[in-house]
Length: 288
Image (tube, rainbow, N blue to C red):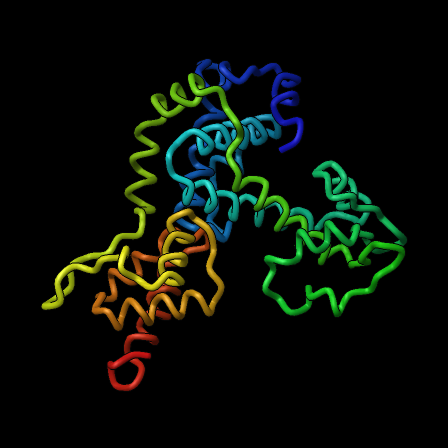
């Protein structure tokens, strides 16, 4: 986040001290816990006991540590999943905040929020930037109130827009010196291995009687969908349906289809399995 490194120094921690000094081991423990919780539940609903018992400074430094780690390891899906969880955690706090506090957070993040009476004025360009990825119909520009080049929204909607802004910010890695990034990866090799095991890259598997699946032979639109998931980005509902139905038709078993969606930042195994079963069992087992 903007100014994070400077704030860390204000708390008495340089980057290398945060990463290596025994005095900050507690921050690193909490940071790893935040990463692991997101890997298991990107919706941000999993309790992080270490975080609940941490002091305010330790909470911030643990967040910064997690950000450095996920900017260094070769696992964009884990970083994007963590971004979803952290943005939802932040949104939960913002929903309980007042109009002025939400506007202040929006300004600090560079989105130009302004408190106007009991509403938030969001510059039109920023509104489009934040609202476009949100699928809920209530965020479509056609249904908003425009005033002097701004969109007026209530605090709850302003918090939801900030959630999207925070997610997009955290999903991008921090530019780090290559030597520092290598040192972080070396120090957190066990965590990186764990993340690769918990969020494996989507991979085709051999299927009974049909031989292996070759993703490089998929139609261009399906290849693009698969690359999107491999990059840890979300697909639309229509895209997910199309990819699952296609994989079923070319002979992939259910486990392979479920695994193909593990890279999605909001992946939920129980929901994905339910949806895959619905798609593959439609029409007496023929599928869509």
